[in-house]
Image (cartoon, rainbow over all chains, first blue to last red; front, side, top):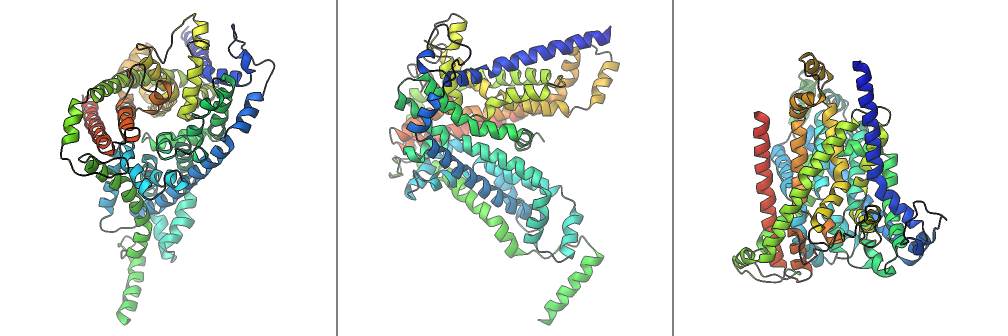
Length: 279
Length: 306
């Protein structure tokens, strides 16, 4: 009796969850549907639930008539540069703080941790002035440099330190006895032994920079220097109101992170859990 | 010279005998490793924070040119009706988004952890919106909730202009925010639920807590509280800084009814070129975030200690 009841509840939960998930994801389906429909048919009543016939005109139009390829390129440059630089800086910093005993290490750690209290958005006015003084507005450096100290960068350093703290003391002691220097231990021993966490942190950082809206929106106003999230907000004025093109540019903009997520699902989930402090 | 050799030899011997003897601090290595990050951090986080405080007492333009005017900006802020309106709109947005988003995340997480084969699929679908850029999310919802041709208005025979109706504009922005970010909350809650040892549930059923709700009320909910409070705090800090969705969905309209604090700051800085006054608004927001998150942490910790 009891077993049957639980199986009925579990079937019910399965059905409800699936239904909710399908409804939840429906807007994404609808965007794809519209992007593949010929523009005159996107506003017809009743709307058609499937794109028949399949029309790729909107995608061709967006790729040919906007700078979206250039925006992809910009976003890749910015995201890769920030991710690689942050991982490198955080790796070195956290190794020293975790494995080398030196006076003031606790102060350095607490000072960096306290920086997480600063809401980054309230710093954009002085950051913009600073970039303006350095003549870096509308440049790659202007987008990249301030994000090296964005909250996820600080979190990356703190998480690395936590993972290095958990490494057994015997490991570095043995390496030291073999005559290995600190640099060698860091890059030949600690870094390879923590590739899992490095991947999770790298993907989290990369997606953050890729999707970041506020800072590139402030520091970039020339169309060829825009990142994808900023660029696609410009296209509306280029087409007038044309829903299929609007949705085609949205789908193209979403594609890289969606693909990244589908490939690295586990890592993304791991990254979220680790950087938010739950694990 | 000779003493250095003895030193080295001495250290080698002790390293073999007493493994935990602290090594001499290799200061050169420490500096090479620690300085790059610390320098970047000081230049791009500490320096702007210090400068925003100084700017808030000046009449600087957006290039930073101006002079000290004392507390004039703060006096102006206290009388700025648009600032107080934007503050209320932000609080309203927080009320509409933080607790509902947490509740929805918890309910979905409780359902998803009970799935077996479909767990991965359902989780992936619910999480997918979270990894989209905000402008993609707003583009999609501007179309789905379009007044004239939107599929939602068509399906439910409505004529609501969701993002330009004074009553619906902010709830619609909050709803889109929940749709976009609930995946994060679900993930957090699932991690929290999986950390609860199965023995607790066995003990619960032995104690006679057979009904699902009783188990939730007396076991799951208190054990999950640290996660719940973390989710609440993280969201509160984030939603104080609401700007992107509002800018892209309503642009502060209709009739300024959705202007939020950060948007007020943005307009003052980048369309009115008042760098000094915009900095004052930033400081106000900074203080609000700091005070409310400390208060919240205190309050939530108190609840936990009960």
